[in-house]
Image (cartoon, rainbow over all chains, first blue to last red; front, side, top):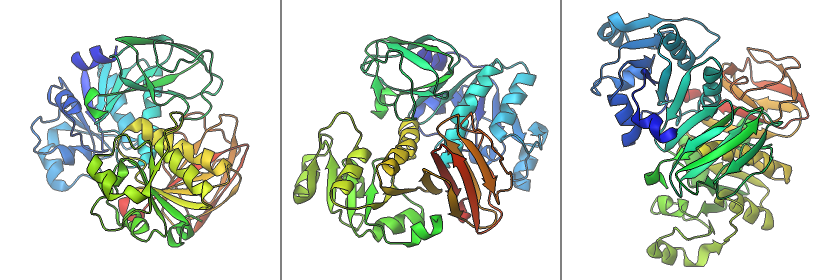
Length: 217
Length: 217
């Protein structure tokens, strides 16, 4: 599932305003984007990096005038103070029929944004979006129900549970879990795949699965 | 509490193997360390940066031979496969009577390490350690029971709850919470202090409080 997601063509790619990507995988996803949205300030970071965004979404307050003029026909003002720019970009995708979305640059600076954005992916999935986050070190995937995740032998994998009542059983991971709860965020971290896939059976969920890139070990 | 923690002299400072700090605040904490521990690979990143560590803790497998020879009298081999190097460093502090500890460089690369390390601080606090994490953007502080956090007006603050049963009431935050649960990780993020302190009343807890540096807004 994860590997396929990186090879496939997403309906849209969102560049968020966290750390600008340097790893070849998120950079490639960004470059190949069929439709590229920048969250507000991310448009500034992306200026002159090649692929021109198709839309810039956010409250646009922080965009310098010269950037606004460059992207004049691409600006989508959304002043909602109750959601962050990543969520605004996802809502823009939903409204425009883009279901499968890769999120780039949503981690790596403010730790509270990193943690919040990882969890927000679950909300997006619950609204019917197929989202995946591609970072400089790996891939984050929200799972609402039990399933199989594509992998490679030796791939480092971390599992995050949001409901301390969720019971989880794994297959094909080095440190198997059987009907386990993950009471603290670190309890599902630093596991390892034993082959080209592993399975997660859980209820009620949701989970987020982190899989490390091979060259980031 | 947070401001005081940054001004005070910690018993020890741990440099973990995440992103090496660049912000002046963690760099200053590192430079002024009374006792400096490096987690394994972090010793390599720290080589030639000025302050020589007093100890290097971890399984030491990943240290190049030339680094091992530089730090020969400072190496503390801990091969425990059931805890990560940050936890080994904390246990080293505990064993050596260092109670008040600042953690630097524990976030910013692998997102699963970032999330796991933030949560591990709670475990360290539960073992009687006074820990604080100083990152390139702010400060993370575990709280086991209700209390007051020093702040400044307009400081951005995020609250993370680990138990979905925890009820939380805030005073002096822009978006007040009253007997609220934080069911998803993003629900307590992006709040703002209204003055030089705010208070958090909660049970059973624990919480982690993130406070953004003034120059990282």
